[in-house]
Image (cartoon, rainbow, N blue to C red; front, side, top):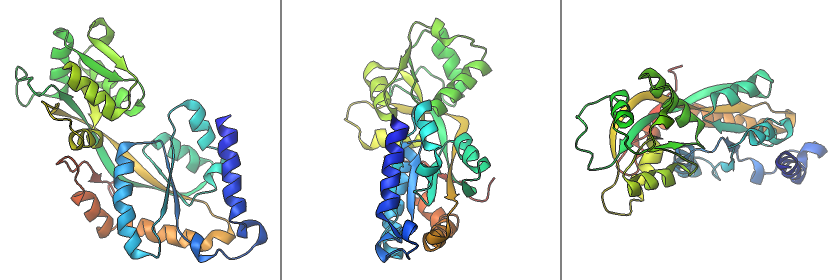
Length: 286
């Protein structure tokens, strides 16, 4: 059903811009590059909001940001549909497997690493019993051995994969043996509030933690305990274009050139929220 709905709306978009069928040149109002954010992530949302302001000064209108969340396998299959992807000029995603799948299917002109976001371990602000400078593995070993409250985010595959890697690295085969191990289906920031309210520990992306700190309700917030050494790279993918979209394709190329150059790097390095600069530029590093 979701796939059918997405395809239907994609068809409306293409038809409404009827120059595709009529072979007409796109009117100026539609020269904006259309970017879909597939695989919804707080980091992408934060950064794209910042970039929208930068680009409104560069062109007559800023890029048309649109979000296509991909939180289930059914969503992922819908987002792999050529008609849906074809409605956009660029795809922004933190899911490397998804990006490579599109590329292997011939739907893209290229896949480019833009920035990295770290996975960090956070916990109660009064957790002074933990030795300073401890590694994420050492702390999680203490959490497991001491039966401390730990929240595992079921809905975030990226964080869940990082968590499993840490448990495996410290020899914990089944973290559920700790009765204080809680699987939560809340979104990233809500999971952090849950950990704060109940005095627990959790893994999270640094951008999500920055959003949490920025919207703090007061009291004693969670604090960053350790960097896990793991990260996720977000990619910008250029979608293959047919002839009638050459002008928008050129605009997308200009966007990518700026984003991977000094201008985009400065925006990423200077961007802060909650007192944190959560993004590390990845352009040219992979």
